[in-house]
Length: 433
Ligand SMILES: [Zn+2]
Figure 1 (cartoon, helix red, strand yellow):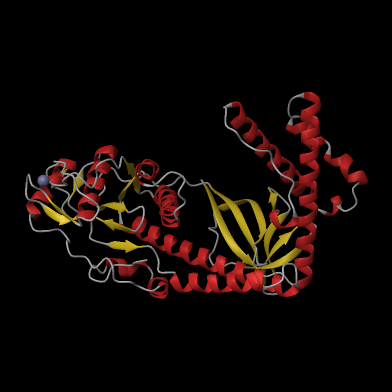
Figure 2 (cartoon, protein in one colour):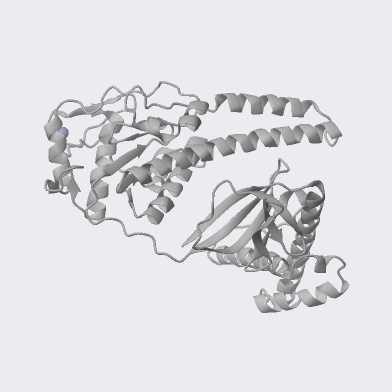
């Protein structure tokens, strides 16, 4: 299994200069190789092989001053990556997709380079952990969480963010197989992820998107200031950094939140059922709309899936069709406009919050898809399947978590400090945009 671990680097002024110099040499090599590839393709009607391309590197070094300053594997990765990208593009073209050409990269767009297999290691120097990069420098690194002892470091990518900060992302391989998900999961949950607003699960937990309005306001303020600066001036550059910092801050908070949320579900449950957002997105959102909330939930599901894989939790993405209309207790479908927030079944009388009902449907579809028994958390004797789930729902009769305060805003700060445990607190579980 492969994992990625990302850390902040703490380069000195000299380190920064060196990092930027290496980055720029890689960029030039990228542009040069792109030029060579286009030329070759025009003359031969096809791309050269990877071997041909790689074999040109030693010759290049003969006349290219500075190219040998960069670790050779790093250069190879630049070439390989470009080659892979082009291959991918031409495959798309073969399949009839109208795709553009790869473009020459200006400095701002070429932000990272990669040490693969060798030339890098984590080390201790003067009581400090450093990332030792061959032909470059020993750069202090903040290892805020440990890489597991049994992990093999396969590669490291160093990247400069638009804020000017440098990060190192390790590609790590672990020998151990991830634990197999339990055959009879005891703790199961269905999560109804609203494409526009919030998520709601079968345990009555409601989660909103994070309240980032303060952060957004600040970003807009800084952007307005930027628009008043003269393009290209020193002040403009300073302000551009400030804007980039705001962007990075927003992104960090959002990701942090999604990490905490996905950790919570993986830690608490044996089986997690969600809707297949690819299908749901096509059904519900207008074409080509880029909705940040839906993008965030997509990220959430991606994180959730890979963490489930890693920890041995069942992850099921079910067909979302009709999950809101269907009654979780008896299966009868009723039309339900968006503004109807409660589910009240005309056939069996089951009443629940609209989203809780949907979440129950998602869970029962998930149980069906996985084909495992549903046991009511503690007693493993009362095992059933999704029918069993329906029966136990019917026994509720009384509304299941109907009146959840889903619109009580909770500040970003509180969520981040308190972490996921507040999600357990059913009365104050709402986090709203
Ligand atoms: Zn019903």
